[in-house]
Image (cartoon, rainbow, N blue to C red; front, side, top):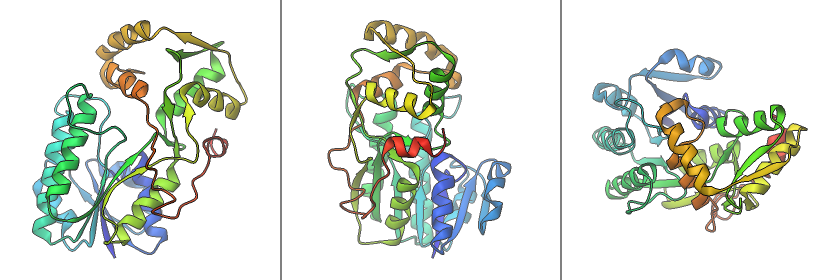
Length: 294
């Protein structure tokens, strides 16, 4: 079948595109900068130049597609690329193009903790609003809420690995007990491919790895995988929040923003983990995945 993909040049998208191609599907990718899609040249991938604000490009993307996999998202706002513009307006525009093209299946990337509630970060609120748009659109749909995704292109994990390699100590925020459940990128990509193939798999699905780790254990595991374990030093949460507030001024280059710190402290465990129970995928353990690329 023909699967149309947004976010295909990003971390998750390149793995989803490769998995779909390996399973015999034709893949069409929307790319604001087609040059960034050069790595897809080894696969039979069709590139549509344009973004989520370009209705003509969205119509070309959706035309004749059996399913759409929508992965586009941002973690820091920059200029016109706001959470509302990308997560909400972008999803709405893509749903409109999909409806006009008669697409039968819509698979959407959200996040653990997504909710349109007071007190949630703008990232989580707009992810929650986008989920609601998908649920109300009338498509056979699957919405995924993955935990922290582990893989070679993960910028946060690579940053933490560099801290272990080059710094004498590695900071832990607060007591470090907030839960994480990192999930291997190829497991996530396979879940997306299976969801595109199965029109009867409908609903919201959390995706996590096989173990729940505290943030402190998460850091210790990265240290072991690098072969350069460092002592951990606990930083009071108030000081961490003040530091993140300063980093907020750096925009996309900030190593940690206030919102990212809040989401980290909220935790990202997946009690309703569907990766094995629904999709039959035996997830790769966090440390095993790290050793594949660190």
